[in-house]
Each structure stands twice: as C-alpha cells, then as structure tokens.
Image 1: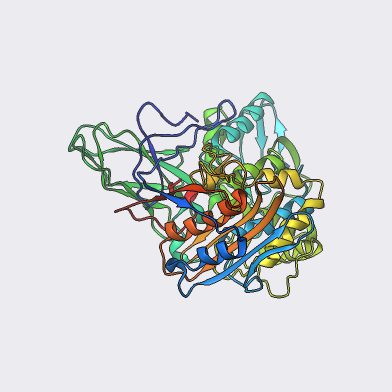
Image 2: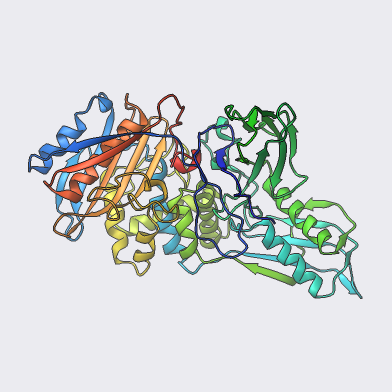
Length: 537
C-alpha cells in the first residue's frame, strides 16, 4: 500500500463530519506503515484565571455550581491513591452513562484474562492436495480478530505463499471469521452511527486503512483537479468491496471545502459529494464498511493476484475444514502495545474485539454474551461492586452502560496491584501532550497547567454524557484518583469538558493560581463524541 500523501495540507474527517484544518500532524510509525492523517481544527481559545480558596471541597463545589451543569446528573469522587481516603464525593454511587470510560473496565479485564502478551493470529490454511505450483482445492483465510491487519500485511501473506512456490488455487477463497460469531454490533447501538468509522462492524477478519488501526473502515481520499471538473477520488486500501459514487467537484482556489463522504446504511455504496478547492490538498475521510469479512477477503485476493497467484473459484464465507494445514501465518503486536492507540484514541472497534476475544478464551464462544460477563466477573475481583452496574458493550458507545464514580475509583485503585499496571497506566491519554499516541484525546486539554504531563485519564463523550477518570499528582507529588461523570447537562460539550479540566487542574495545583486555556469552535458543529473520532483534537 502506498503512503498517504503529505505534500499538501491534508485533513481527516470521520465520514460525514466536516472539520476545518490547518495541517497534518505527524506520528511515530513503523517503517512502511501508512500514515494516519490528523486534522488541526480551527479553534478559538479562552484563557481562564483559576483561583483557589485553599479548601478543596469548597473549590470543587464552586466548579460544579457552574450554569453549564444546572439540572445535570453529576457523579464526582476523589480519593487518595494509596489509602483510598475520600477527599471529595458527590453522588458517587449514582449509576450514570460512562461513555468511553467503559473502556477502563474492558482494558483491565483484557489484561487480566488475555494477558499483556496476547496476540491475534491470522492463518492461511488448506486441505487441498498440491501438485507442483497448484493447490487443488480451497484456500482459507482464517482470522481471530486482528485489528492491526493492513493491506501491506495481507500482501506479506501473499508474498510468503508465493515464496513457497504456490502459483494457482483451483478452488475457492474461503473467508473464515468463525472465531467470533456473525453479530457485527452489540445490542443498543444507535443505527444512525452505522456509517461512521467509530462504529465499525466487528468481525474476526477485518482490515485497517491506517496505522491507528481503525479496523473495519476505509479511507476515502478526495483531491482537486481543474476548477469546475470532477474531483479525483480513491480509496485506501484499494478494494472492489465498496462502490464509490463520486459527485464531488473541484472548487475555485480559496473556496471552502465542503466534501462529505457517507456510506448508505446496509450497503457498501459510499456517496462522495461537495467541493474541494484547487490548492486545497487531499481531504481524507473514514467510513465504516458493511461486512468487513468480505472486505478483508477482497484485499487478500487482490494481494494474491498482485503476487502472481491465481484463485479460480469465488470468495465465500465459511469455516476451515478439519485437518487443514497452515501454509503461512501472521501474528499481531501484543496487547500491551496495541493498548496505546486503542486507549489513547478511544478505539471502539478494538474494545469490542477484545470483549469477543475474552469470551472465546473463557467459554470458547466469541460473543458479547460470553465476553461481557467475563469483564464483569474480572473487575469484581479488583474490588468493583458490580451490583448496580450495567455492561452493555465493551467500548461505551452504547447508552445502555451504567457505571458509578465510586466504582470507577475502585477499579483504578484495584489495578495498581497487578503486574501489568504500568502498561495500563501508560495507555491512558496524558494531559497537554501534543503527540497523538501520547496525549491522545487529552492532547489539547490542560496544557500549560500543573496537570500537563501529569494527569493520566480516560475520556468519554456521547451526546449528553461525558466522563474523565484517572490519576494525577498533587503539588506535593502524592497522587490522587478521580472520576468525573456528567450526564444530561444543558451546557455545551466544550463548557462541561472545561469544568472537568478545572477539577483536575485544581487537584494537580493545589491552591496555586493557574491559567487554563479552554478551546471552543465558534460557527462549527462539534459533535458530542470523542474528539479523536471527529478530528477535533
């Protein structure tokens, strides 16, 4: 696969969500990885002087009295890191929608059940007899849920097969995704999210278009040509599994980019509309793919063809036959490394894959029905009282999840005794650190304050629900644990995130005066979703 172009300013959109951009931001990648394109949205900033009364309870009460939270459901708990001494509590036992704070439980369970060294394996197997360079029978691509597979990885499998002397397969290409069940979504997700990459379908065979491992999605690149002519459109990776309907045009130099990329529900027809101006560079959008199993099989079939291996039969979904022998294999990076982009960028697809992988390990069934009880059972062993909690999915995208601030604190304190705790802690976004795989969803928040580089926390945002839970050291260097859950608030998402930041900055700075810069997006629609999903951080 070719690398995404950076010769001109480029922007990333989650399909259908247009965001202004200044330039692409770099990320550390392995050699040969396609680069994820990140937008720097046009934001207005306001710097607020923060003063303390010297009394933590009084200061937090003042913050929570902000009109942006009038009538809201609020759960806030702060405790000491070591002894668990309560430092502040408000409605700590109230079950609230945690949004992506649900991933704190999923990830702890994944480390505990699967282990930090856990890897996904993808095998190419067959029972076909071989005669010379020909396999006389089916070739099977068997997956176990690897979200890191990119087109280059399927090409390497094809190259390894060619190196073994295979040039022809007389049977079918069988896509075996039976490691998991055939359900693509957990119950309770909003159908209107279906076209978007943050709600990609779950399969044991999938493809990622980039090095952020947005599995089950495809990158659609729109570039200008001459003004007044159709824009150029291509997909990364190239595939025949989706159909692009290109209605996009090239606008005059200096005109606005109005590109929209949207997949029609229940199909793989992707409509590209709007205008991209001359000199405006390439605009890259992510869209989810319907039935990622066949998407993966198509990418692999193309790789086989490019490597000179002909498969004469059609592509089908099915299980590998008993007694099939492995021809070539690919192993993913370990969970300890995968946790970094997964947690920093709040990747829903990886969270749900992990739930099914845990179900497969515990009960032999790669299902949500098996995996979610495994998560609940494991976190209870960490000291979490799950009696009032609801685990509807692994990612927190569904609104059926319910957690409490006090039990999130118990979770964050409970993981400290585990040998993988440091890996868990390092996977959390770090406030004010601009690198996407370091700061993640906190990279534009709390910069220039005592919390910058200090607060490690998981964010979470859905419409009417936002959360921030993690760790921060006070001015004396002693860490505290906090959980902040807001539901049903009347204020804007930027306003209520600002209140979360004020609380964490107060914990980090003590009574020292601070200046907090809060970002807003005037005249721009900023969806109430994780900023990494909408290119607003």
